[in-house]
Amino acid sequence: MCAAPNSDGPLAGVRILDLTRLLPGGYCTLLLSDLGADVVKVEEPGRGDALRSTPPLVEGVGAAHLALNRGKRSIALDLKAEAGTRALIRLVRDADALVESFRPGVMDRLGVAYEVLSAANPALVHVAITGYGQDGPYRDRAGHDIDYVGYGGVLSMTGPPGEARPVPPGVQVGDLGGGTLAAVGLLAALAEARATGRGRFVDISMLDGVVSWLSVHLAAFLAAGVEPGPGVAPLGQGLACYRVYRTSAGGHVAVGALEPKFWTALCEALGLPDLVADQFGPPEQQARVAARLQAVFETAPRDEWVARLAHVDACVAPVNVLADVVVDPQVLHRGMLATVDGRMVGPGPAIKASGMAVRGFAPAPALGAHTEEVLEESGFSAEEIIELAAAGRRGPGSA
Image (cartoon, rainbow, N blue to C red):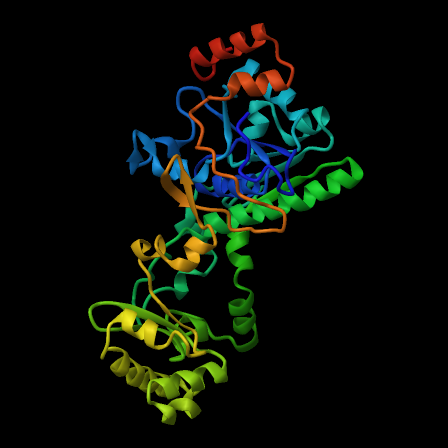
């Protein structure tokens, strides 16, 4: 058995069947795997998760697959074949949760809707991650992260002030936010199931997740009616004290001197004490203050500013590129780079808790590498395992 990296984590002994593909579900179950859960990817024979073949490739395997699926196990089941769905229902009896990311109605058409799975295991937590949720006018629409942040209003706030075209965020916030919410919903329902013996169907919409992140922005809009477009929101470049500044030699620093004590310390360190009183002025004043700061920051390189302000309580940080991140001393100290077989593959566990010691990371599984192992654990006979393997080789949809 491929042990989870934290076999003494709080989810040790919890089994999760992962039917998802791509980023949202993979990130959700990675969080759970890092907490000790036994995550079993259920993949299509011969194809598997599309991330397996998504460039860039490392020795023929997608780098994203190696990062998102480390520590998990993989079985190959053809869910378009009756033998595959029957096998999934049997596997559910030994599982605590199932996570899937099909469009609404697909699980029903496959014959493994929540009602069917719940009948096999009443305590099962079934988490469905979709773009728009299980109901509503957008229920059946296709989508990707850029669509969710577009519908949710986040895209309208991005980019430089006055820019005619919004700029998509550099990371997939809708996907990752949806994956995080799925993990939270699963854990809440799992806690209830442990107490009552009854599971739940958890409906996660990535658009819902984007909108839920608008707590501050939507509250301000509802109160004042001001659209937080690019460069308008206080924390979206509207304030000079919370902005990115260009330094010499092409670098940048991120200034987050939002509280007056931080702003005072920064102004004094930069030799601009006359700006202390201008922290929260109107937009025209913010532009003048920002220009003064920009002129000072342009006089030295990024790293010199970071070193010069390291001991000033002013919330100034470098704008790192990924080459900087992978050697950052705080990132390294916190174990935020996962190394498998001597090679860094991606981020390490973000959740730390007492008594959890990372003993090493198991590699991402080859497609179907644990099929026989997992099926045996659920009581399948050797003959049944051979039959399922043959059905998979006959191709999707074969009986």
